[in-house]
Length: 266
Image (cartoon, rainbow, N blue to C red; front, side):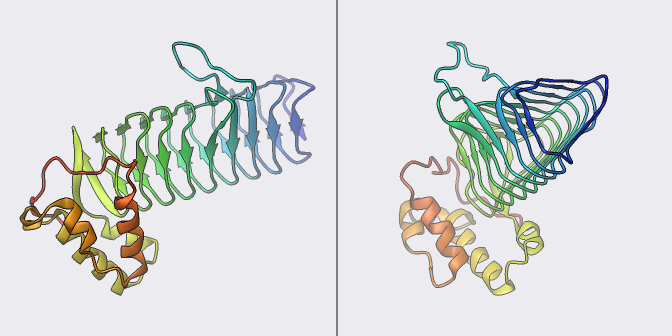
């Protein structure tokens, strides 16, 4: 373990032998830092926080700060669990949970400067969270999601896999998988074709998702109810199965306020 002499590391912190602690960092007791993880400088890691292997944390990030809740955090664990090979850029803040659970972040994510991950949030893997994005408490973000700058997601909402939340979008409803969400208040605008292609989803499956999207949100979608449109989806394709199953989950508030707008294909 390489620790710069200007840094303060609590002796009760567990740090891998090849981790690097740069100048003016503060690592509190109870923190666990995995192999090859680097704190570049002026980083605070606190709380019951686990950082996996190969993470990079840039200056002035605070990882594991207490949940920002008015009544105070409850429980004894109040953890933060972070996987491997994530990058946290300048001034990122990630809070621990508000109870006995954990805020959870997967692997291979990029958190750009100034974004905030609140208490009890779950972020999957291979996501890009752009500058200034705000994820409120208990939000769930699935794998391969991309956020544009300054987007916001209200508490307890879910963002489906391979969705694109456009810059400045203010989400007060769940974001279905594979779509582009845009606006204030945000609504579904198009199928995220570019994101699906980058994920190497087969062309035939993208074509099936286009047809499903048109049935759900296209120009003639208002001819039938949203529930009937979901039930009528052709589920032979596994990617359409994912979308249909997600929309049928009763806990998700995905019913659109406006339908029938002509989609703009990405």
